Length: 127
Image (tube, rainbow, N blue to C red):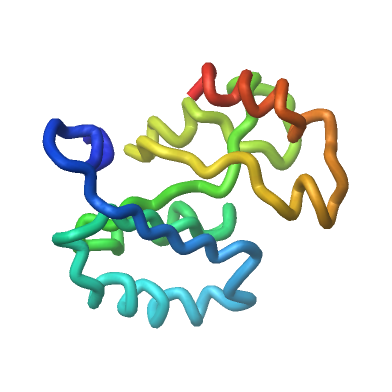
């Protein structure tokens, strides 16, 4: 299904939680998920961005309308792209959104060719 704000009407506030490279242990996920499920999402669109290793685990555990949102995607699709996630893979999991344009990829890690304004524009067209 499309994200809630894709429907006609006044726009709801957007709340996003990027878990970055956390938590360290899978054992900590259920507590985070319980906290998300306890949130009232009736007045906002809630996007939860688990680390790539945790996306599949979280997908069927959020029950309050919050949307699991991967933290990145490539713009080449499936193939021999080590460590990348393709939009097609996300769609096959029922995921309809993705977070791109991270500050730490541009700052802490330096601007990689795959994270400059031109490639972000390509990603936007691709997704």
